[in-house]
Length: 392
Ligand code: RFL
Ligand code: PHB
Image (cartoon, rainbow, N blue to C red):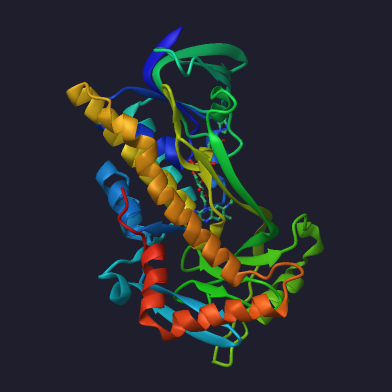
């Protein structure tokens, strides 16, 4: 049986960044990723990085292209009732900003560094089972190139997302799960057209939520709230643009530019937390431990902060022999996780229209948006959460 200090299940942003941070601390690890490299590098997901995420990527050595190509944003725009209100992050948060740099690019940069260093990163390595979480030597069973293999580890970290297998290594009843599934989904498109805005637009509308984001100066990313189970085939391009036009409509002077749509996908939305995020020598990080709906742009940032806490704890163990920080891992992460859960829930329920929502509930949403636009305190609360809080 092969052996490593830290076996990492999953090569998404959490697993790849953890591997990078451990490598930089001289701790050996192996990343096992079930998909092939191209698939992992092209999976469309997050777009917004908090300042602290950018700082970590830079320190890890993965900040060079981000600094060249990432777009710094000082705020977002909220729209409702044909009104528009800008939320300015630096003035409300003591100087914080966010970066628009796609998750696909973060993943490409991290993979390139691992490959350049010859650090162990196996694609098409399907982990079937993690056993022995409560022993001194947990074992990962996986299949690679048609062969069943085993990897003995001092520690196993499940970075294998919401549908991963590592969580199943924990006996029933040890972890508590908290969950909310939303009665709507996001329909996301990529379009070859310059963004029609300088900053992201989050729009509340009687027709449902819409978001205008971007990937570059020439590629726009847009989302529409749609019913669960929506089939993208029912949405020809003209219908998408007409619906976006209707939901972003303002009394101001603004036009949504249209262009060729290159990708369409429907994404269900969920809030989910497992507590604790550790059992014996098995740790969970990122989406394996918690999911947020994308409205607050927190998922990737949470994954990054989990693995920073974990890498620091493993380095502390290596340097001092003390498991003190490892023992605090779950509590340290969960404080930030629950803050992000609340913020993502707040953004989601304030901006989306529930099927069957009453006029009373709509009035409450509009009052909340009005409050954010008329109170510096309310705006600062939103800005601090969006741009990232110092927790843990
Ligand atoms: P990932 O990215 O799901 O990676 C898990 C990896 O594990 C692999 N895997 C396995 N490997 C081996 N054996 C097995 N048995 C395995 N099972 C799974 C998978 O192939 C995969 O490569 O989890 P990770 O690393 O924790 O990263 C989390 C983020 O991907 C996620 O939180 C964000 O994408 C969420 N998110 C956003 N987060 C932000 O911070 N800002 C955003 O703007 C933002 N926008 C979004 C988002 C998520 C979205 N979707 C798709 C729900 C927008 C969308 C539309
Ligand atoms: C994105 O660009 O994909 C994106 C941006 C902000 C969000 C969610 C997704 O809140």
